[in-house]
Image (cartoon, rainbow, N blue to C red; front, side, top):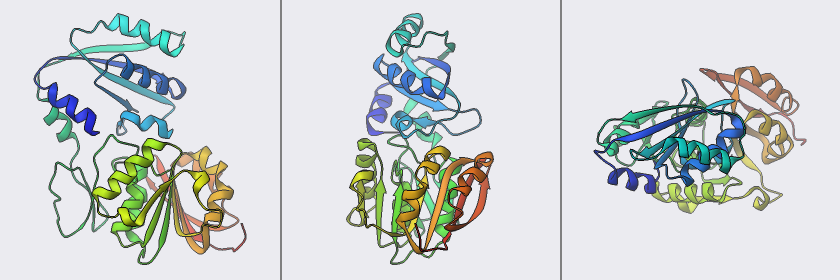
Length: 310
């Protein structure tokens, strides 16, 4: 989780809390999550049934499902009916909200949250480790990253697919562009795996700040540059471009991402479901030979640029 949330949880240990769960569609979820924070929730999570949760500001990365469970954690004395009324006023949602409320027993919230995230092996020699855990293999490539600062912790199938793919590539002396960088996990992993330089591209200023801090924590800040799309030099070309975004965004970005990859370079596209792969592939097929990898319902398309044209 983010540092601010962790501090709040530390102050909140051993007291009961109210857990408010709301079911919303993708467009409602962002507004509801922001409103819940404004109404005093000490934490907000977004979750799709069967998938990993998305914490704090991650909804700004547009990495949401069609139907989302939005959960807010409130002090025990909170009036949930008043919260629900305020949610409608703040968000402008006029339809009834499907909601459930549960009282959570006393427990050590710091330990509960921290136990939820443990080191994760990705590939043969790459681990993603939260800062409160000692790396299980100190001599392996260890990316230190706490959940909650921006989208991308390695737990989601789509991010894991990208990390596994990166770990298999020859990255020495290569330049990487992580388009839609979120937490910066992909660029940082590439740098720790031997890449010479990485650019993290994102529209969200907080994601860029977070990725810079994560790069500093991992000792690669001198080789990492976070910037908005409009600041990426028009002549910039990369040996490898990774974009873990959404299917429709990948389609819209096809001309730009194609130009970014130098002739003979590699492209990896993720953040898409299996039934979206063919549509996305069609927008890149003229320039790339893309293979498919899958994990659960999620798909990675990756391959080499076969033509020099854009």
